[in-house]
Length: 320
Image (cartoon, rainbow, N blue to C red; front, side):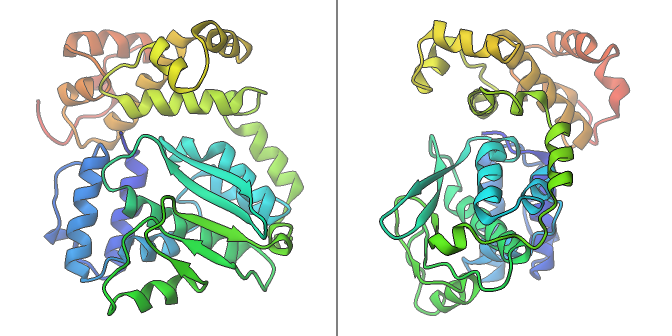
């Protein structure tokens, strides 16, 4: 699954702030989950602790998650902020979904990685840290989670206290999914940062696709297409994975005023633009990363998207 360049930058910054010398870590550009998993593996080894992704998530500054951070902060309650995250999380972490369900004693927010990807345990720890830090910062005093589940193996005895100190809640390991549990009282707890007017303004500014009735489906489709790159997914396999017939998926995309071809084209365009702006890959590598067999085909697509060749968008740091 591809990873967003801004995500990589935020993670590298967090690793450095945790005291790990970035010069001693792999320097190859990170464009997918395998590259990010390699970075985490080396960083944890250098730090000497497997809790590093959790630490980085807890310390990640407001704004690192883009508009999602400010939408969550301006929500009225914990439940409202989680609902925003559930709706839009795929836009900042393609392939990662937040599933909310009610248990007998609590509300549970699970992290669902489907299909599994390299480094998902570290990804889960990072996300748990990010969500915990924001809810602690946004909510009124007294937020007290009854349970946190982690889909990571139980660490060595000498490391386990660090996890408990960071999470500050009852903690269990070796679960199928990582999850945060909220009491009924905390689920409805007000946020001291609530700002209804800002929330309305931010909601109006996000992509039209997330304001329509089929927004969740469209986000899911975009996430599946993004995750598959450089392979270009087909409409039938996407419909199957989402539990729809081809005709049903086409109709729902039409209600979003788009089509399968337009979704695929926009995902490739957005991914290509981000990779070119990042500058870590040669243009031929960008072309491959977004599913073009030939650089010439990528150049023609770029001209169609932006009206000029990709070479005018900024010179890559490495030559072709």
